[in-house]
Image (cartoon, rainbow, N blue to C red):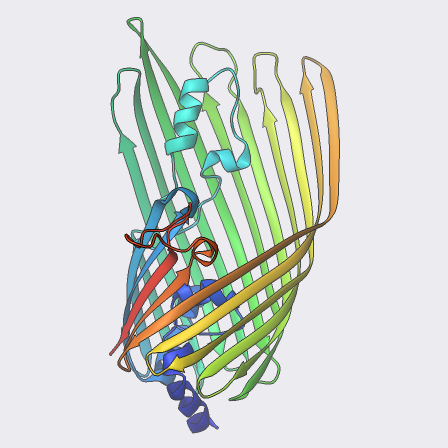
Length: 423
């Protein structure tokens, strides 16, 4: 059976064997289809993957955090190297835990008291990418691996303008432990992020200072079980993910006698089942999921009249249907496409007290639907080198300009470009 499974892996070199982040983004079947990117979500899988493939790897990833304005491009690279008993993986600049940054995604904007400084913090303060990821993965049985991923990141920024002298910093630490066997995967992860900002405002010969401190942490648990693993059909039941994130921010504005504080937390739970079919030159998957999330934010002393409040949001996602397929069209080209369709039921509650007067609002929506379609290509230069792309949806509708070939739309032509070389 082992030789048969290895044979299937090697015949899928142009399809699933040399997978990248672009492939994962397009198929949207992470957790159901395993490939080289799975080593970064479960470090125990790294030694299993490379033992089956019999090769090491080096890769680069290029993608957009905010494709609508062609900004915030992520570039990160990695190397996997080892032997039959253990593997080492190193990555630089890999995107990491974001926490409550950017802050405006949590609505942290104490209006009317730190207007200029808060705008600067919201627009500029970011969480760092991981300066370094280190994975150590060791063989743990005939077909099993145990691994650990340690990562950290730092970011800082300071400048001086006619109006402001900002000093912004952020730092993160992360730990991920994973265990992987043929039928089962288990992961436990922890992330911590801290950030600070000091803004000196200069005007009329007077310098005032506003500052902010923010800390965040997250815990993630994952479990996957393959009920009927085989060389052609695999049933995954269940695929479970649980994450809890909490964070707080405290502002110290100058010239006022109140210090606003914000606390936020979010719990997410997801359970799914799926089936993956594998052929000699193609692979396809179908999955169904149920998701639940609850998010809560509280704030105190938001203004001089002690504006306090609380906001909660509960979301049930059912069903979430995922489908993805890819096929080797030519020996040098693979085409792939993926689709996600989901229905959300959302309940929001908002309570705010200002100067002793409380106002409460509530909103609920049923069957908010969301559907995404992704397409991509993989170009193979011989048996070991592959470049994958996730094609922008704008390209499907608008197409590039005829003469220049430049993108004719708000998004770049490719949302993600990946390259991997096995040796």
